[in-house]
Image (tube, rainbow, N blue to C red):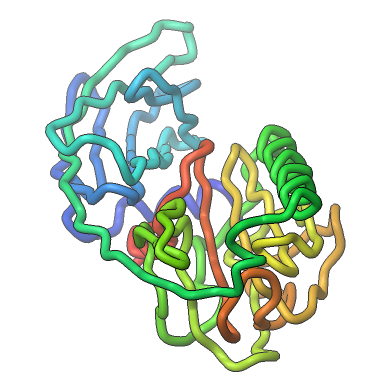
Length: 287
């Protein structure tokens, strides 16, 4: 789908969307205007004379994708630990003469009660040996280097889809205790499904890393451009290769239980601009 066609979707109704703020022909809206911790905000802008746009919030700048008619949209990720409260986001618009106008739009972060989960695992998967720790640190460095090398262009199209259907066995942000020890919050969602179930790419992109990792098991990472990544963990098989371009819905692997896993399921994660977000909040923006 062409960028101009994809950008048009924000003119359709959204859940809990703010009313557009108009000033000198610039129309800006935020969806949703009340957003939970760990979720995604969409910024939508209409300004026919725009030659360049961006938005900034919390000392960070985020790109907006603009079509020939001046319509633009972009995403702002909200960290799961960000303090609740009223927020002001600045949007910068440059016209063909190079004149820049700045506008502000408001939204609110609301607190989310993340549940706790207590899991018992083999101690070798919890207290790592020196060799396992070295392996984990090596794999983590490889992943971090991959995140820093995202394609500088938008690769995704046709919104996003859930990679596999099934029961959400572990939601996003769950505070985990493994063998009674506190661990990092759950950075994706776990979808329970039978082993061997096809796993599909959430949207178009480039496969930027595959492999079998200590915790994540057989894994696929897809770069959707502009620091937007999707992740698929605990696979039984991997059906794509590094550097391969994939389309939305293309089979990239099969559900399994590799790595640190207690049964067949898919861990699906989304990472926007170095921030893990609830994948379901991204899907909701396109409903």
